[in-house]
Image (cartoon, rainbow, N blue to C red):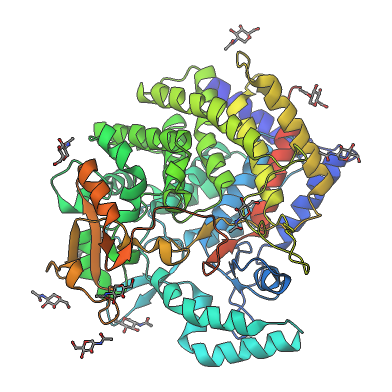
Length: 630
Ligand SMILES: *[C@@H]1O[C@H](CO)[C@@H](O)[C@H](O)[C@H]1NC(C)=O
Ligand SMILES: *[C@@H]1O[C@H](CO)[C@@H](O)[C@H](O)[C@H]1NC(C)=O
Ligand SMILES: *[C@@H]1O[C@H](CO)[C@@H](O)[C@H](O)[C@H]1NC(C)=O
Ligand SMILES: *[C@@H]1O[C@H](CO)[C@@H](O)[C@H](O)[C@H]1NC(C)=O
Ligand SMILES: *[C@@H]1O[C@H](CO)[C@@H](O)[C@H](O)[C@H]1NC(C)=O
Ligand SMILES: *[C@@H]1O[C@H](CO)[C@@H](O)[C@H](O)[C@H]1NC(C)=O
Ligand SMILES: *[C@@H]1O[C@H](CO)[C@@H](O)[C@H](O)[C@H]1NC(C)=O
Ligand SMILES: *[C@@H]1O[C@H](CO)[C@@H](O)[C@H](O)[C@H]1NC(C)=O
Ligand SMILES: *[C@@H]1O[C@H](CO)[C@@H](O)[C@H](O)[C@H]1NC(C)=O
Ligand SMILES: *[C@@H]1O[C@H](CO)[C@@H](O)[C@H](O)[C@H]1NC(C)=O
């Protein structure tokens, strides 16, 4: 506790005593802080095409379509007028977290003041799940809910998409006219794509609360607890609506995936999930793995028609969600958030260890070459790696302060230290661009110029490069409580090469932070194209929502709807049998066994991008570098 307090004194001083805006790094940080603050909504805006609804306090976040290849196609992806503004808590939750961390772990001018943090806080508070019976349950939703009097339930819905789809044809005409006026070419293709994907947009409506947003909010709560001296009222307000840690842990365990359970509700998972993690489940039959959605089969049968349902009526596992839950649990335990420690049961310990093991296994096995299924909602690999590295950073800090934690935290530390200090560094070495300084994920990576020659645009380059720096620092540096500085760990053979990599990427960020699009792909729907639909993967459970089973070989997808079906894998399928199932067709479609990247013809999927999120992780990278004891 003493050490912690010392650290916090530094934190407060670091932000308020900073007055050294002469170096290039300071100028870049100042500009980033300004650009981020300009993207916060300070006045709510109502929907009326072409004006999007914007909720007070949130930061900008956009839905775009991942068109690629020829210049006119690329234009439909990146045009500054072609997007739908999205009001979600995920981007704002992360931006707030990162702004606070830039001052906690980094050396930077003050990133956000009480007034603006308070606005973001109030905005995030609107994303609580209102269908809970107990009070102060910290269960969160990606989109805020509206009350439906007919069904007496609260339903999630993305405001702008909902308005858009309510009168789709009319709205598409308006959009077409506006884009024509602006001189945008080839909009027919865009309108076609919008029309066909409106059905898949509908799928993502009505979603239940999720554990990703939920544990992001837990990490945010811990930060507010640590920064009580600086922002006194916020933690108290947070506690009022979030204090029910017992319920949080009950729910986390209730919806977890337990492959060896006898209960359908616990042992059944999306066939896409089973496809990539089945070897892990075989080797760890007693695993308890956190899932994406706070809903199970028994519940979806009851409430699907009241407007609350998981996509495809079944839960799944996403390593990115897992990484965020891991961090939320770690920070709640390390900083003793409310009574979290009291409810950290044996099963919760298993969930923590299983989820960490799955993350380490996935990285070591390159997601079994199916990142599209393993990161089913969160395609950015650099972002995923950073989320996972945050737990290692916190555990390294804890070890140095000799705090007492259950032994499982040592075992998770060992797993993450191994994978992040070896495999992840290897990944960066293999994926660095030819300049040996910067990194690309996939946005704009497959564009061509008017002569048909490859011309990648690097739209997620700033984001991916900044996250690489953040991963390297989280994995190889720790905060020294005596000096408030970040220090490199010693005793790693990799350290020199890691320092060189960090230096190069920081130099690249200083030179290029404003030279490329600042997009990222922080979120997406689970379906990227035909190959990511769950129905084509081997399964052993085929039911209607009402529980009646059906034979997939007698189901005509051209004539019958799959909307109210549950297609999943229950328990474990013997691998010999599974291999035969892969060879077979499902609903008369061959199993999609390979993944050819996110830019494939016909797979132009909607993705979520947030420029202020890119700028804030860039700020974090620079601020932390600036606080390194070199
Ligand atoms: C809340 O209580 C009602 C009535 O007892 C019950 O039907 C419903 O399932 C409960 N909801 C939750 C989320 O526990
Ligand atoms: C409320 O729910 C009913 C039944 O599911 C649905 O028909 C109706 O469209 C919903 N109302 C709104 C405003 O979404
Ligand atoms: C897209 O670009 C990447 C990187 O250059 C390449 O590996 C991949 O094969 C390309 N994909 C397609 C569909 O052209
Ligand atoms: C790091 O260096 C310090 C002082 O040189 C030493 O006491 C410590 O044991 C070293 N730690 C590791 C992990 O090598
Ligand atoms: C990285 O940059 C710092 C600051 O310029 C310098 O002191 C250090 O030697 C560099 N490290 C490596 C490995 O190049
Ligand atoms: C950044 O710019 C400086 C000055 O032009 C140059 O020396 C350095 O190599 C550049 N860094 C990178 C990574 O391109
Ligand atoms: C369940 O739903 C299916 C599809 O709508 C229907 O054919 C079947 O009769 C229903 N079964 C029961 C028991 O209601
Ligand atoms: C769909 O089913 C109906 C009734 O069974 C049948 O008359 C019709 O021909 C089928 N349509 C197709 C496209 O298979
Ligand atoms: C899987 O099934 C095959 C064929 O039925 C059988 O030979 C094998 O022993 C089974 N493997 C396991 C691990 O049960
Ligand atoms: C199955 O797909 C093939 C083409 O892949 C098609 O010729 C055939 O009619 C389909 N059968 C059914 C029952 O839909």
